Amino acid sequence: MNYYKEITILIVLYEENIDLLSKNLINLRNFKIIIIDNGADINLKNQITKKFNIYKYIINEKNNGYSKGYNQAIKICDTKYALMLEPDCYISEEHILKLYRSYQKYNDCLITVPVSYDNNNKLTYSSGYFPENFTNHNPFEISGDTCVQVVLGSSMFFETNKINDLGCLDENYFIYYSDYDLCRRIYKIKKSIIQIQDSFCIHTHGISKVDNKYKKIFLRENNLLFDELYYFYKINKHIEKLKNFKRKILNYIIKIIFSIFTLKLEKTTFLAARILAYFRFLFFLKKLNSINKK
Image (cartoon, rainbow, N blue to C red; front, side, top):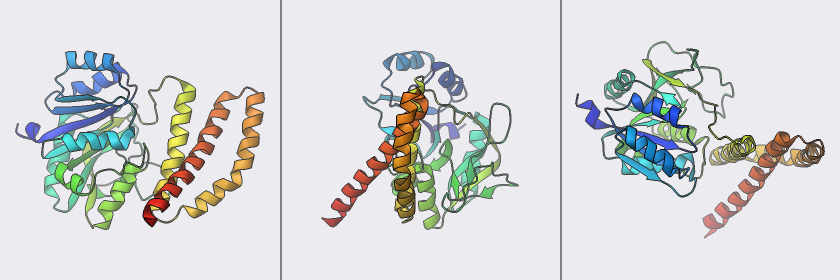
């Protein structure tokens, strides 16, 4: 069918499990596939390219993050449409086709997304409201195709040129909130994001593939807090969050000292990651302000 030639699947990796990735790629054999590996895993590339026909497989020497990785893929995509897909999000050809047809059906639509389930066939969170308006991450139940404010970037179908025209993802976000930020920009230009009722995916989100548990905690907490602060900075609502966190700093430091002496290394890593994220954001903010003054 012609739609195979019009769609490229975009996948960004970091310390990925070959079995999980292979399970996903089996469903995507008929499409062009672009893989960006932020983990510089040559062995993984060799194994995957022996089993699958990958259109472009790019190895980055350092972890550039989720946003830069997907932007890299979007910018070298040469088909009209693309499906941005996380490696732990499984979707069949049938349900990709439903996203494709729905996208063409709705004139003002810039993104279509499937309904998300976990491995136990339980509905999971994949869409909802802007985080400044709503903090409840319970699954958003829909009846029919539904316009939503935000969606997770785990499975997003779009027209390549239109997302390029929007500036793609903001690369100041490392992992989190860049999908929300993109959705805000779409909302501002009065275009829609539509969750398609009869298109489904299975997403095991929240299950990190990083083996080292301390590294896993640090990466999540450090980037999550930084990206959250940056998101609220962009909508001019970060000051109160910074003040609240500043009041916690001394308490965090005391807890770190106690955790070290009691050998609670996971707690120590968690607290240290968040403190470093706070100061990392303050440094970033200072740098942004100096650039804006020039």
